[in-house]
Length: 315
Image (tube, rainbow, N blue to C red):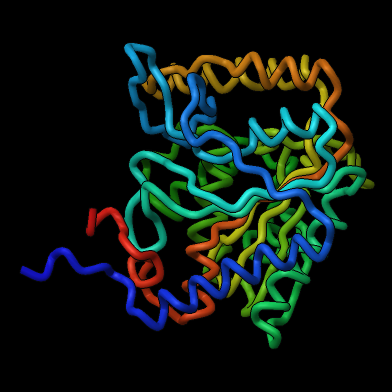
């Protein structure tokens, strides 16, 4: 029998070790504090599009964490200063060439920084590992207008639904604004992104998640969120972090309603996170980066299975 063997080669296993060490060195040189937070908790994210893996601890319902974000924000509110976490995260129903239910996530927060400063640091990190990488910064709205001749912030929902139907199927004729935009970006725009690192900022307000919003020079309400794509592969997601507990509670409630409408189980709101926001989360920006996807790019791998010791297929 050979099914005991790992999916990764020994040379890539060594490269993985080197990259993990280089990531830690990058943040240590910049005087970050590395933090180690739980991967198992009694609550999880309410996001309609993210599914948590459930567990049971002494008869109490629990969840493997989809990211270290909520715990890290509680540390920030407690006065930790700039922090990073390099560890495991878990998401249900995610498997494929770029997905695994258990994956390695690098997340970090900069106190007093905005999202554009953090984008520059993401660029520094990637270019340090891949020195010949070109870097492009472009707004979400400019990308949509260039490829679809539509303003994603102000276009009527019916117009976005029509475009989504044309890009996929009639099943999209009644979908939400956020979901139509997600589809159009992933199907139409993402495959046409430039080589190298592309940093896309100013996402629509309906996709704000845990990011601040602001009114741009054109008078449009946009979210201070960005995503990083490396050779057309989504690599990182960052925010100028929302610090308003009341607004965050409202967004959590909207998430719960969206999950009900979609026929998904609702998740309890993380009251401890809201307590941290009420106590005072400092002005900060944060970003989460998929380490396994980064390794795929470094190694020119075609599957995530090739860069992690044991993917789900080997467990």
